[in-house]
Image 1 (tube, rainbow, N blue to C red):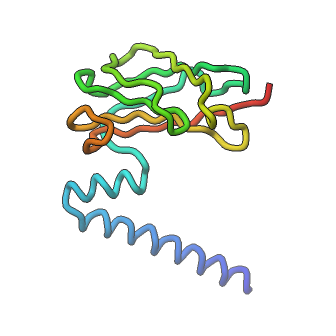
Image 2: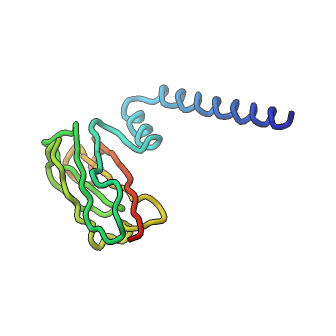
Length: 142
């Protein structure tokens, strides 16, 4: 009986918290809603990033990715393990190879490192974010 009461409480709390997030999101204006979306889902804007090499070994020094649905007229910043590896205008549907040689956390096997894509309003790394996407990859010991 205690298990049923405990499970019911957990389900009730989960539903309540889920409902609160919807209320919060609906109460924000459009600029705050975009910031909330980045904070809650850690992504914003149109487009997709796909890793063509989603698994590497500790000896591999290259990742390959493909982008789709982004603004080709804006400068795109690509980060691997929080280090910038690419800063240029890129084309949708083309593959790009990222050199990860010497990036400290790019070969960690205790978690999945991130590849992040960023575009800003003014094409600077510190400008207001228009697109932010991220994917993770797996590193296996060689």
